[in-house]
Length: 321
Image (cartoon, rainbow, N blue to C red; front, side, top):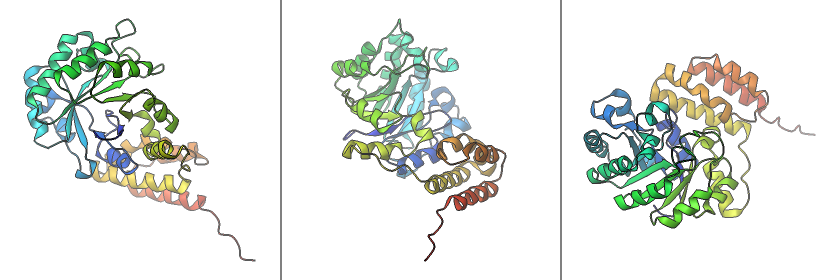
């Protein structure tokens, strides 16, 4: 993991191939698939199998697994390695009740022996490098990240990503980046910080904690340009001009078309609705435009409406005197 990469966080129902390629085009250095449950993968479920797919242009890319059953994890690693990812990432941080409540994801932070067993099982079964993503602890009264970080390194993981919230917080409150400096003091493997990265200034401040990489999640959903914006700011101390309305509409169209090619038109258009607010942010009359787009269910209809909008917003050529 050379340099100080900017990573796109794995996010369920967000970081599929079209979205990853969008962020890659705008400067994301490191990509991850959506998480895949090991037990479902070994039984050949359609959804987890689909999540193994990636384009060669996405490299370096990691496939993220979760689960805690030793046999299932071992078999899942074999299935994952058949598609040749650059690394395997273990999800030890998902806070969703249906996952953490059963002892997987962030639930592993309540039992560090189980946490260690999961990490060792994957590393022992894998030929590819293995990384781990986790949180600070279950709640404020049980912050275990320093012990967990040591275990991750002792087990042989190649890097650790920490979302600086507890499981109980979910996405509420503020991520506590002060822990990153403390974690960096107890491990020698690369540390990637995650949580509340929304601006280039945020990325700069996170690197000042000593992190070796920065992982951007929700900030990229609303602003996939953040990777190139952050890199430019880190290099020059200045800001790139924001995308113009025409650039935003053009990117929205390209992303929508890629989404439909990957998922089929009907689902591709329907599922894309969650992106309009972010991609088209700042357009005049956005609320009305978005409301109109939300009612359209055919690709050609959306394309036509967005192209009309782009034409209406185009600068008027100056008259010759």
